[in-house]
Amino acid sequence: MSGRPRIAGLGTALPGNSVPQAALAEAAASCCSPRVARLLPRLYARSGVERRGCAVFPAPGVPADRDAPEAYVAAIRGVFAAPSPRRPLGPGVAERMRMYRDAALPLAAEAARDALADAGAEPAAIDHLVTVSCTGFAAPGVDLALLGTLGLPPATSRTHVGFMGCHGAMNGLRVAGALAAAEPGCRVLLVCVEVCTAHFRYGDAGLTANALFADGAAAAVVTADAGRGRSLTGRASLVLPGSADAMTWAIGAHGFEMSLSPAVPALIAERLPGVIGPWLARHGLTPAGVAGWAIHPGGPRVIDAVGEALGLGPAALAPSHALLREHGNMSSPTVLFLVDRLRRSPGPLVALAFGPGLTAEAALLG
Image (tube, rainbow, N blue to C red):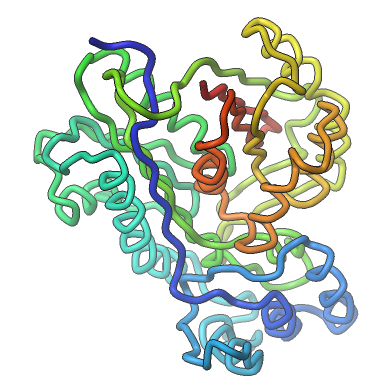
């Protein structure tokens, strides 16, 4: 018997290193002007991030009982060296895409295997594969590579959700849920993977993105068959009026370039209640009646702006602040990391993320 699509299994994956934020700030100081370099320690300290997984840097192999910042700095500068006349803006797009290809598949495969195991599903049982990524492009890409790596059937259909930014997982869930609902008995594997650190920017622009973003992968098995797991009960989407330029993501000659306006938190605080409140009311809920909030941690001010907009207390925001502190902003997989942490809480959950546009995407998980 089939019903609502549900998340039957979840899995996550992180790089093998966990880089202290202070080491990242020190390494970044050699890639910008002396004036801006003096500001970096304060900017990185205020980011809400303490450590980040960075798949493009080799693990420095230091003892677990000490950080040895100098070892991390050396590892970072081995990839992103100080500007030179030959490479004033660092690696070009082709080299950064190689970084993405080398790092994305191992992360994606690890998360996918964990999700399959959590769902009790064999790779041969997967009918559809939905991949989500905005930090790399290749054809064939990570979707085709996953078929061989995981042992998925050659007949598995593949759908890629690309360049959607931090709310990509929400769009991926919508696609996976629609596929599961349309074909009773089928199983959909959703895999989100990002290698944000491949796009470290040189110069005095993009400092906020440099201070926030990290690498990781998350996966989910979605089906409409009866069983355990959070049901995909409802969704909402809103382009916040007058905010098209507040968050952008473009391809430059030396990597992908993220632009984040300082006005983003204020736009969220002002305009989010108009969509989330009525949407929850249609499901017989208020913000206070939601058991858990998986708020994508776009930064500490973004998390707090959602709290202000919806009247949420510190306890509701704590999981997002904790994930940001421990792992940084991994873009699309991040909200699934939060769902994984919160899914065993009794009562309904809301997953909420923001992407270029500025667009808010929400999902109610019953």
